Image 1: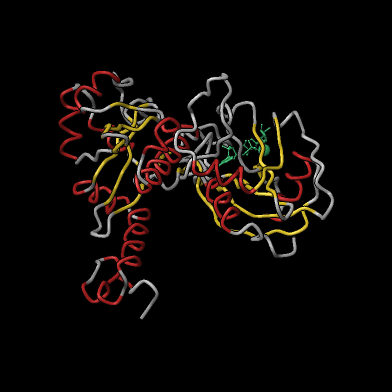
Image 2 (image 1 turned 45 degrees about the vertical axis):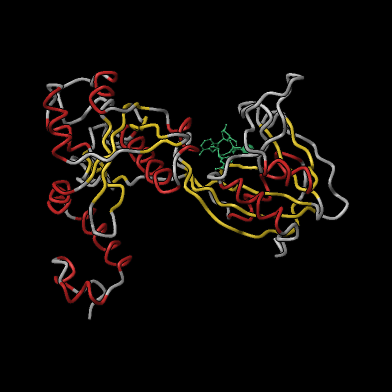
Length: 352
Ligand SMILES: NC(=O)C1=CN([C@@H]2O[C@H](COP(=O)(O)OP(=O)(O)OC[C@H]3O[C@@H](n4cnc5c(N)ncnc54)[C@H](O)[C@@H]3O)[C@@H](O)[C@H]2O)C=CC1
Ligand SMILES: [Mg+2]
């Protein structure tokens, strides 16, 4: 049997799907939708749409959480009709995933200037009223979403952002065309294909064996400290990027390094966060903060970090006017790194 069950794969044969796990079937279905514009257009008929306005997702408040509502193609057509908009706008949707039952999920930005519609941006407040929700900046809402919606909306926002920023071919200057799924753009004049990209970023929790090193940029919310992060330079390995970033930002040399996890991060552009634990050379713990990159950096004890992790409402200003020391929220990979270290302070054991 061939890897893709030949044409049977494309027809989603009963035999084929019986042999493959749900996950593999789903993955192959998504692959098909990315490759085949007609199949993708067909999937829109039964698919679900997540709506955005100028890259802010449509959300509904439910107690302490935000929920991301889904809309059918019919709902969407009804909305566009009511607002006197062109149905062509639906072609700007991008594929962002599918359910286990192969219901395809799309994202559509109704606020960006459409390449396929002659109509200008739709009125935001009019749409919010019709859709019974609000378009809220993802940065403000991310931590009040469940993990599934957070991941889906991050992907959607990153992909919509990429399309909005790659409307023209950098060689010919001509407008590029998106495929139906939005997994690429092509220049019609020279056939150059552009694919969505993520910038690799290393994020490192440095420890000296008993304490961990946390830092803050002036742009961070008051009181919040995080692990050291930095974009990989071209040509660098992850190990080299960690070593350079730690040296650049706090003037220390990393001795041991251990990869732990990764995360897509949509802000400000799409990044792939690569999270590592590292230790410094014994006795070489004197921090020299690079003030062009950071506002402050310091060593924190296990107790201080464990207490900060348990803090529920970090934004509360103290009576003195100061903000307590707090850490990035659970959905951020920085939080995972810090939590791992609190649970096992000696987790960086491999040579760098
Ligand atoms: N999800 C998480 O838990 C966390 C995510 N982050 C993310 O990590 C990213 C990198 O952290 P920083 O300390 O700001 O990086 P950084 O230490 O590399 O400094 C940023 C500077 O690097 C330069 N740079 C080099 N390549 C760049 C590129 N491809 N895109 C943008 N700037 C580039 C720019 O001059 C920029 O001002 C940030 O975007 C931040 O949002 C940071 C901490 C936690
Ligand atoms: Mg940095």
